[in-house]
Amino acid sequence: MAGPAPSIAAAAEIMSEEAERALEGWRTGGRVDLYDWTRHVAMRVAMRALFGFDPDRSGVDVAATFERGLSFYEREYFLQVLRGPGSPIARLRRVRGTLDGIILGEIARRRRSGEAGADILGLLIEAREEDGASFTDEQVRDQVLTLLFAGHDTTTSTVAFLFYELARKPEWAERLAEERGRVTGDESPGAAELLGEMPELGMAVDETLRLYPPAWIGPRRAAEDFEFGGYRVPAGLPVNYSSWASHRLADVFSDPHSFRPELFSAEERPKLPTGAYVPFGGGPRICIGMRFGELEIRAIAAAILRRFRLELEPRWSLRVRQMPTLSPRGGLPMRIRGSAA
Image (tube, rainbow, N blue to C red; front, side):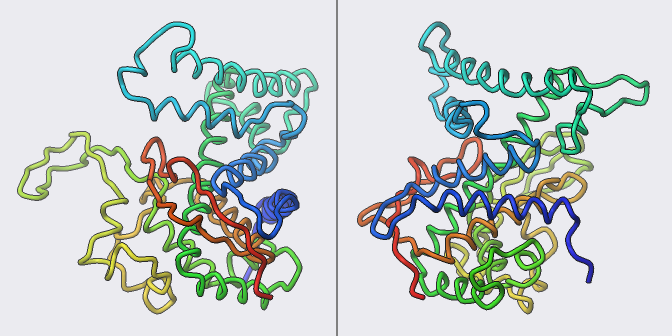
């Protein structure tokens, strides 16, 4: 079997490196907001692996800046339409200005040097339309912002929800840690190990994505007339699908609200009906970053499990935020414990 592409292998190295760097500040007995911690790790990974940015060069906490921007969509609608200094839209515009300064500055630097670079940003700068026209700086900026968001926000949420469930089923945390130890010992796993030699970790991630699909709702358009729930839906009508709902159908998934990674074992997964499991969408519009995201989730989880176990704070209960992607509302406070090894 062929190994992973060089770019994926390099990305896996960056993912493990950033996770291990961020874990240096963890101490047994301490506390961590895992959602916030993972957001910073995932943003640094996205900046380095996708765009070749140095996360430390700008002097801006890009992860926190993104979070401030996303908080706009949690506001009540009447607050979103307010205008003027101090309004939510004004804060959103300041966030956009900060991110523009970083991204447009890097685009300008590369254009001046004449070296676009071999990463995705470089490909966007050098891309040409059929008529030879290139992307404007603003068009490149928009693509970068979209990919930075998609490249870190979904990973952040999935890692948080994974460890929320592992804290409630610690026997699975031990199983995953033992599997990781058997495969790579104290070494950081590469892409081949993460994607091909740790099936139980893959099962746990897949089950997390079933229960908490980050892109939990998706817009589509009816390709042809059909009937659903007794209603006729004509071709061309805008429709939405919700994997949050479909992933919890009791006639498809037994005990649908419980964390059961065994649903995705080599024996059980082929029994799922076509289209029943769509955490990244499906068909020609399936998420192009799916493989990158899966690899990153596994790399961060493997790094944590090598050294630590995480427990939920007493009396804390999960509340799910559903805009713009699923995430734990207010973060995920956890207690840090040493591994059993």
